[in-house]
Image (cartoon, rainbow, N blue to C red; front, top):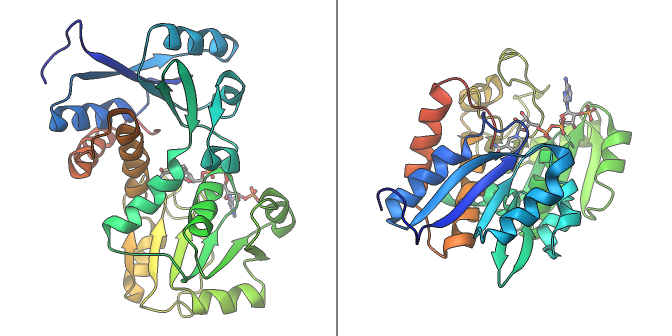
Length: 288
Ligand code: NAP
């Protein structure tokens, strides 16, 4: 579809600030490839006007919208329903408008898993290790647990804080990443995921303290950082002989999942990824 008409259905993203968002580029590519009559725009919404903005989008008949910083938690009070993934994570990143009701979703969970599936990697019954226990780790940890991972060990610099943060995820064992029990889990890991910001631009020389001599070369290693595309962590994993996946997969995956919820059409994820990489190359945009 080229251009917009009176029949065009509306989608978008709300955040503050929003000019740095990567979602318009990704979603526009998906809409174009699918040949659908949709438009996706970035909408700056100040925290103090969130409620009015959400009601406005409902009144205007938007089919749905993405939600980014700083609204992901606050928006939960403005919606009619929150699904299990969003409730578990404590954040909504996608809203679907269905029959006048606004439904809150979190597509980071399935988005993270979609990246694995695109590589033909399943998580059921596998031994997984996750580094870090912040906001993004919640989506990763819940995604792995939801898909029936065999054992899930989280390594953190501050295990007390990490244990408290992940206390609602039964099945996640948390250790200091210098603990012997953590090092044993690292040696047995079939899946290893970095969710800390260590290695993210501009501090590209930073890396989580992984003893690569312990890691099985057969392990599948993922870094959810997407700037730079190959972090020091992923380069070390490759040097060890491991298969790797970077953070663009999760970013594209969450966008693809949202697109599918709104349109019922499976998007061309390769086209979304190309648009994302192009937007990243402009050097300005950094967020979903
Ligand atoms: P966050 O909530 O601030 O959590 C960061 C986690 O890393 C915390 O557990 C924190 O530990 C730990 N950490 C931070 N600095 C550390 C250091 N110097 N040494 C050891 N541990 C450290 O951040 P987030 O929102 O989860 O984001 C984390 C990363 O994920 C960012 O790089 C972000 O860009 C990326 N991300 C990617 C996607 C995607 O779609 N690909 C989506 C979301 C986020 P403490 O609690 O002890 O500080």
